[in-house]
Image 1 (tube, rainbow, N blue to C red):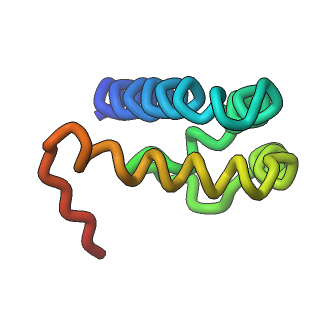
Image 2: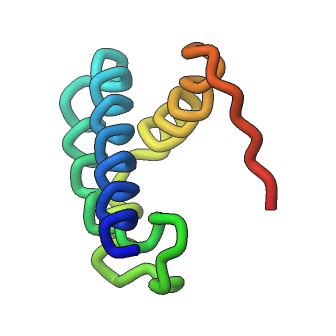
Length: 92
């Protein structure tokens, strides 16, 4: 199970780095730098994690991300599966 958690965390970090590269062109260097700081939030977004409450470091890093940067990153990340022709169904 621990191996799966590391694998899942690597997938998340890879996705964030991919999105950083995509968003970086439209928001300059500050957006990618701000997103890199969100690595401290990884333990709280890995599926199956027992860490349900983000740390203060995670919250501080999230607060430091520019609103436009964060929104554009979420928009780009949510469109990637469709653009790559990958079926994705996220339910509760």
